[in-house]
Image (cartoon, rainbow, N blue to C red; front, side):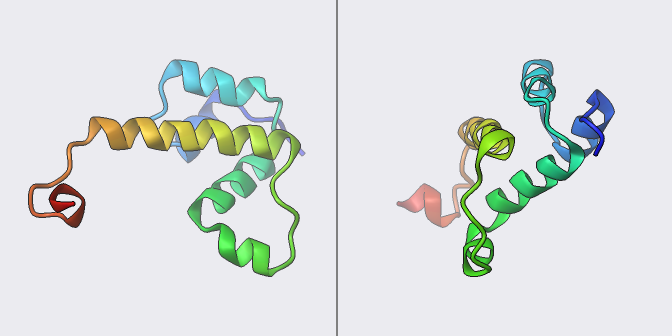
Length: 88
């Protein structure tokens, strides 16, 4: 299992700034662990239904970093005036 490189992170995580990339690499995670963290973020229900334990260790660190990145990008993108989130 190979540890993440900057190239791996930039390919897998769009919109990541230098600080976020450094945080992700700093976890010491592997490419496989990053893919698992992204799978948890994409949809955790199927993973729970497969009786997988909740993300732990490096994968949990990656989930935290990636979810923070998603939250930041949602705050920067104003809602479309016609979208349901803009109406609520």
